[in-house]
Length: 162
Image (cartoon, rainbow, N blue to C red):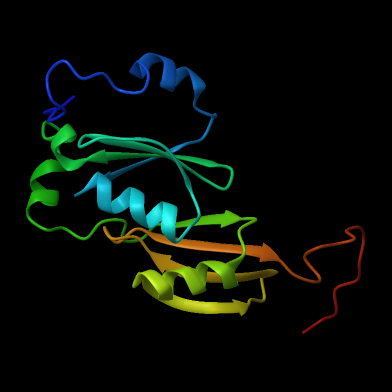
């Protein structure tokens, strides 16, 4: 692990090994420039529960997803460190998709908090009503809910020829 800036003698909310054991089989770890700013975005725009935050690390739950936010300096020994310090764009080519969060409410909160709204809430052909927002570090989130016919019922159906 890289540099820790948390004051000497202060303890995190739980030991790292305990948190690691509690993580679901799939969790996200995002490197961010400022844990306070990032955690505020997730709380204010995506209605996340912030479990813990300090200068080095934040743990948040966005809907059913557990998201770790590590400050850049905690990974200063990682090969990405130089690119991040040089201002490399984060998250290019990846879109974090989360089903079950009201896209209209997210859009409204994004506008209220001045977050970057990539696309307004709209119904999509893949069966979601979704909105696209970017966090302060540039990670793009597509959040939405199922719409007809994706809601079901599912079963055999005929597909008409083009």
